[in-house]
Length: 114
Image 1 (cartoon, rainbow, N blue to C red):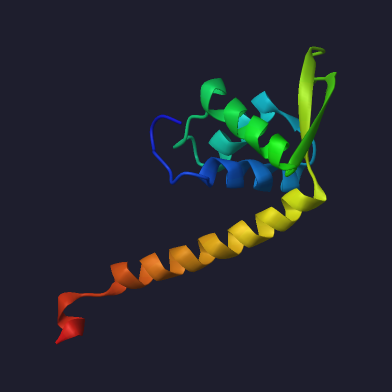
Image 2: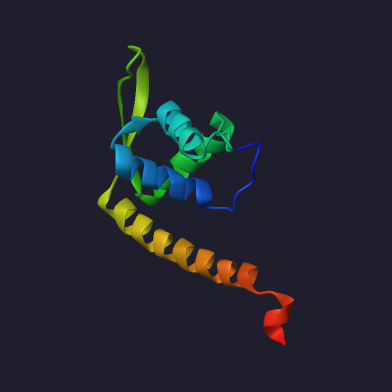
């Protein structure tokens, strides 16, 4: 990621959500989808994405298998596991709660404290 830094663990959450919505996908497809959803505010490169994919696979949140991509190249396709769905739900709740708390702080004005 280049243009906008995001909180640690955020890319993993984006990967899980991407696989939840789109189903099995290769790394390049995951990266392009994240960039597309962000409105091209995020740039995901291989050096950032693949360590996250490896960690998620080691944790059992995703699984992978070799297949053939749309342009007829051999590619590793990743899919969400049952454990990954559970992790996605838990992390989504945590993010929603964090975002709500931060939104409260941004909503406070000095005159509200008097």
